[in-house]
Length: 385
Image (cartoon, rainbow, N blue to C red):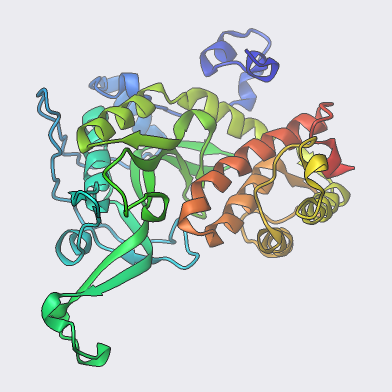
């Protein structure tokens, strides 16, 4: 096991450690997958009310236990929209639009259908409802990009301007979605974060000109910062290369990721980021070195940790260091690593869908690396020297 993993303690170990100052640890009622099916006691509910956690009427959804693990199409409730979790060149669409207005791409050599975007969303929503039956689950937020247009055979000779609506066909090459579980909350550095799950599908990563093969998906479970709608993802909660042949396999693997997600460790690591600070000089060094990193020779890049952000992202971070209303510098120029991490994830909202989750994970790993550098580890020292 890597040394840095050995050094980490679970929340259980922290509370058993007699040397910990409990006054420095924020109170929170945190729920985890293994405990989601437990009905809360009266004392627990009272504790939640005292913490001003919003109580919501919850309708549990339980999947029927069958051998085929059918996909259950759920009737989602509409919820008011807030800041999008990704912007870039995306647009927001409704689930019904994907179901009713979009065609389903096929593998051209055998005409086998792909797993459609709406199937992916339904599978994940069903899995979340099974794993968290007593929690409130929000409607999926869906963002799409790279619209692929077509037309029906009867419109083959028409000019584009003369096409009728029923003669147009569309689907979206790339899709990202997010499902919030707002009743599972915690606080990090004064920011309320809630559990969320989501995924990314990009048809450009499939060979649709061939026969049907295993299809690629990206899936994550993590937390979302409500003050800015930035997502917080760690390694345990992210599966970058999820390959399946059908919806049943997809559901099984999604459930496996959620059940193995170490929420306690993730929360602890995020809280630790708020305890270390960069000086104004160190942040300036980070910005400058990050821009130099893009132009380093490949041999030199291999000797230092990866930074998967380009100049446009770094420029946004530099601007937000002074202007962001939530994560800008302190009066003396210092900035804690929780804020640095959120500057990364805020800038990441301008990434395309197919690179969005990878960069979000890189932001977390890189921020933890900066923390190690501040505490004597030399691996990330290049970015601060």
